[in-house]
Structures are given as structure tokens and as C-alpha cells.
Image 1 (cartoon, rainbow, N blue to C red):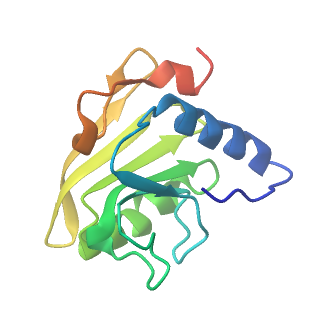
Image 2 (tube, rainbow, N blue to C red):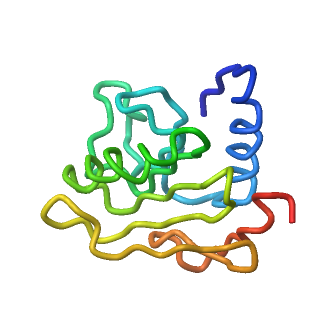
Length: 145
């Protein structure tokens, strides 16, 4: 995993991203996590494992097991144009963690340029990634509750 130093208001963003990573205890599983600044700059990607760790080519949408955006001022963009883009390219699971209102919005089943299933999880809820449904993340812990 690559880390980038962020400053200013992004520090809250980075803290929440770090909590998300810590609360996703997927140790020993066959996937790779990359935090990269790729177009359109996802905050966190959980990718299918490859023998070369994507050294020869960037991951494609079908390689993404889970894509997470941490949103504050970008919330409308993350739930609008980015969501449509990810669905159009077939990213199977997309989460938006809302720093302002503190829900996590999950999107599944992309078809015809839109996600067919969307759920909103609050502080009292637990959620899990579809590819690791036995691992549950308490949403409140992401926000220090």
C-alpha cells in the first residue's frame, strides 16, 4: 500500500481512510490493496491478486473487488458523476464514506451505466464487502463512535 502525505482539511480524510483500512482486517486473503491516485483518483481499491502485483499494467474495472471514496466536499461528485462512471465501467462494488453526515453508501450490481442496488448504513449498522461477507465493519467505529 502506498501512502501520500496530505495536509489541511485532507487530514480528516486521511484519518478516516486509515480507520477504514484498519477496520477491514483481511489479513491472509488473496487480494491486494492499493491506495493510488489514478484517474479518477479513487481513495482505496481492493484488487484481485495478480502474480506481478500490477507491475506490467494498471488494474482494470474487472480487477476491482471494492472501490471506496472518502467524501467531504466531493460528496455530490462521488455520488453522481463518479458513481455513474464506475457503474458504466462495471466496478462491482463501490462505497462512499460521507465525512459530513457519517453514513456509508454502498453500490452493487452495475448494469446499463447505473448501480441496481444501493444501501445506506449509519453509525449503528455493520456492513461487509460482498467478496468477504464474513467480515463485518461497524460503521460507527469509522467515525469514532
